[in-house]
Length: 202
Image (cartoon, rainbow, N blue to C red; front, side, top):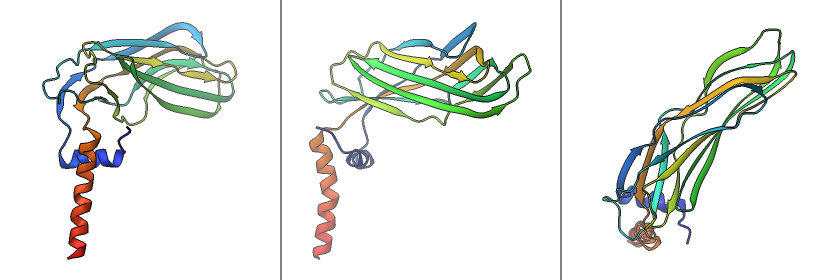
């Protein structure tokens, strides 16, 4: 049964989720250094132990949330000739455990005319503002080795364009919380409605 997000929010305001553990994901950093290429496909993976369940409600599903500390950071260099230049900086985050997977992508872009004639351009930038993402696993899932992966899937196109090197980095926090049972959510949602109805009758 899917729990409506509005009721989840209401339940959280009234009672709060029980929280077990917040664990740093560690720094994830990808690295491509030569040869030149129009597309990057590098990755870095950490394993995080979330097996401390001391604050969770036994038997209920577990929500795993990932909150980045900062926007994804990119550093590298590329080259191009005169013409229309398109650069997609694309970072993919995958978190998986017990057959359940969270997958999301941060994308930021450059598109426009560019003047070539220099050996290469080097620099750094950052992706979109960080947002918390989450997914749910059943109670009993082994959380002793939660896999978190950063992939650099950036690409560049244009006359004579290519990456010389490309590095991405991110760090954040993984948090476990109990997901309330649907019946409890519905009860918390109905209580204020019933109270409002009684007040109107008076």
